[in-house]
Amino acid sequence: MKNIDYQNRGFAYYDTDYNIRCTYTNGAWGELRTSTSKTVELHIAACVLHYAQEAFEGLKAFRGADGKVRIFRLEENAKRLQRSCEGIRMPKVPIELFENAVIQAVKLNEKEVPPYESGASLYIRPVIFGTTPMVGVKPADDYELIVFVSAVGPYFKGGFTSASPFMLSREYDRAAPCGTGSIKIGANYAMGLAAGEEAHKRNLSQAFYLDAKEKKYLEECGAANFFAIKGDTYITPSSDSVLPSITNASLAEIAEKCLGMKVEKRQIALAELDTFDEAGACGTAAVISPISEIVDIDTDKHYVFSKDGKPGAKCKKLYDYLRGIQYGQIEDKFGWNTIIEF
Ligand SMILES: *Cc1c(COP(=O)(O)O)cnc(C)c1O
Image 1 (cartoon, rainbow, N blue to C red):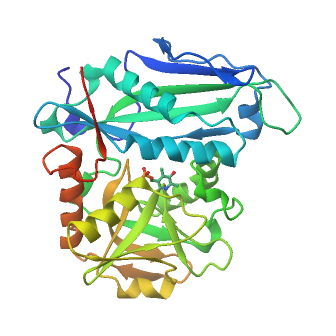
Image 2 (image 1 turned 90 degrees about the vertical axis):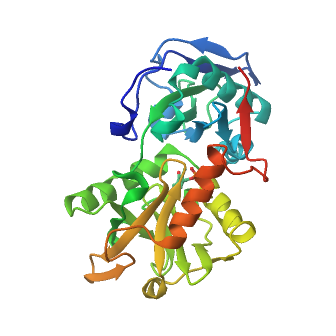
């Protein structure tokens, strides 16, 4: 393990020695290759550059107090990438190929997996894109799958210690057509950049989205899912245009099966925001980022969840339980971890 100041690391790209690559051509995936290069050479007419035929995943590996390295929900991420591939007509990455590529990327970069005490983790980024030169709009014939890793700190400054304010504005509700939000593709992110910038200008942490059609129901926040706590109930929006977060699904399962809470996955009208005790953004990168308030900049209404800027008690319980499983301190009775043997 390297001697690195992980405490001051944000959620960013940090170089590592190795990445894994795999090429799809003539209708078949090739062998996994180990690469030390940080770049790819692309044809100027490569499909991905013009029509954004690209999808990605994000998952993490954790070094536990017992020294073991665990990858969280490897298979679920493999399955979601398959859905993304199907959604934008790319060849599905076989589950086993995906799993092997991720495991190899973690093994080769073992010394980059942050020590348990640091609270940091190894972020794993698989990405697949169409490389065939073309100008007509159709799926590419050739694809590159790359898996690289980066040792990261918290996504939002302060990690779980503080709650942050989010911006609500009808201007920015996903410009992308309804429905495309449900797959993990870069094009959706590019559409959200303007909203994120506007939020930052106002000293708000991220944009919060309503449904693009009626602008009445809660959807997502930034690049994370939204959940709220009302009494003893975990509530999260159900919508075809929300990306199915694996963290959100895990939290809902923990809430119901481990913490004895109720779980509701349903449409949530904007007006209901006033009735929630706690709220949070969740995702692999964000883990749980408590939300202090949602500021509706169109009406100047503030929906406040945390007056003192501290995370709420239920959010804290959920956070501790999830982290406990990921770092190997709480029994993984769901079988979510893949333990890496070195
Ligand atoms: C990846 C992602 C999330 C979080 O999903 P996890 O599986 O929990 O990491 C939420 N929203 C969007 C738009 C995403 O791309």
